[in-house]
Length: 119
Length: 119
DNA sequence: ATTTTATTTCCATATCTTTGGAAATATGGA
DNA sequence: TCCATATTTCCAAAGATATGGAAATAAAAT
Image (cartoon, rainbow over all chains, first blue to last red; front, side, top):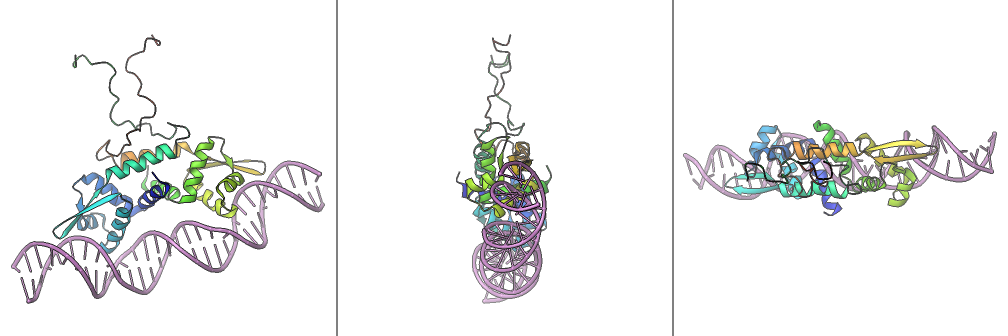
């Protein structure tokens, strides 16, 4: 990932309202939420939210799709993943492992031998 | 990690010069580098660099120690790790694994059974 | 066609950030 | 002590970001 892209992504998340929006969209899953719903839930005025959504969209961290009068926003998990990879590799790459959170491995490592049940 | 702390960390890294400083310090390892050396290598005027180092230090992403006339700055790997954990857990926690970079597991998972050598 | 609802753009204001020269501070060496 | 070197603080200018009301746009519903 290019530096500029990373800086943009970091800047997009480095703001309380926008971080809250992103976190809400992550919990909302791939369908996302309409702008009005985000505005209501986070108590952010429509105009202000629109500005923040634009910032997040420009950083590619959220996607939007229109459905009638509604505009649904959803988290772009791939972009977030790319940003996390940049941070772990390019920002901590000098000493691999040093900056990795202890629980980075969310899914347990695959067993090396077949379990009794699998045999 | 509290939101405010995360926003601070993100904001600290969301600036080209500061991100460059942090990346340089990561490669420099735990000993770090004196401010003047950073200034020279990245071609950032001393006053400007001092401002950025202060910002990084306030976000706890770098540590400093004085040695004579020099002030050595080093990356705070633990703080970076905490930030990465926040991003993976609290920002992608809704769907664990979705935001994890493919290569998150830098160190291979520990084998579940003792190897021949360990027995 | 008119109204209602959803969202965005426009715009002015306020606030925060970045920049770097010059002066201040601090430490070691002559 | 006096000088050289390293870093920080001071300060002012320039630039970027955040905020939200009001108007504009767009798409359904009546």
